Image 1 (cartoon, rainbow, N blue to C red):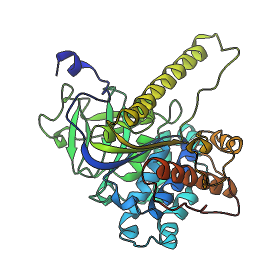
Image 2: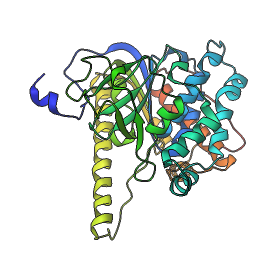
Image 3: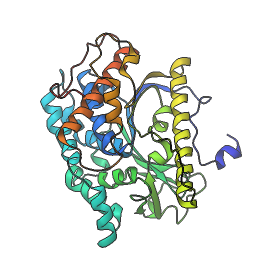
Image 4: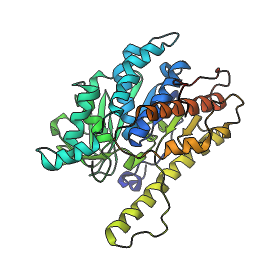
Length: 379
């Protein structure tokens, strides 16, 4: 690898390195509670289809990391289950995520971080601890599949990866068998800027594996790590999966850049808009590269998104999901704000339905058609 490549903090999705290993990876995007609940439907469909237990890696960012971490904590209670048991999935996974979706934690965290001792991220972390993860650490995750919770290292400009065997930044180095709490890892992954970001971790520099960092394995990089939302770097959670496996399943519930007829011209708001445009283009490029990889055969799998038109799959027995209605669900704000129970069920149904269509069209045409988890509400 050239010196220029070594010095570049952006880890491009490689197409010219060694061939990926056989295996299946699932990527869960960011998008606040909207993504968190949409991905619950995706997990539900994969579980019923018997594919969940075949995953080798689950890579997530932001709202997807809330879902992923809860799935990891419940994993041993869900596997093995043949045939899959709805009651088991609901009791140990679905109901717990939905309980959090019934609580507003971002506004409380902001107010508490301003008026009370501690930071905003401290308050968000406390909410995750209270409602989902308790005192569980990364060591509570299963050995397989590998769960990777992604954040962005603001100091190095690279991805910071939390997992059971290690947490690492390729420039700063790795800490093996980290005992960071799940609440802390998910807080970092979902520290959406500007108000919920950053989250600061105080670490012991001696905990890093000697020589494991490329060029920044020194203080303060190894003692005070400043992290932001994983979606700042990679909102699909794609990179850690792409570099490893040949079959990539991507569930995208991310937001979309809205047009502005009259963009603000003051420097602060104009700069914010320009950054949104840059971010939108980076996301689009990653998605295009993913889709092209399916077309040229370098990767197998499927992509589905919260804005997908289910009619594009051309399945006669796809679940009824009118595109105008699913676009309304896609417009649910990117917040950690309470979602009404009916909206939760509709988002779960939509995640389930579009995953079902994508799997049967592009992964396994022999799969029987699924049915809505909550048939009374549809989408």
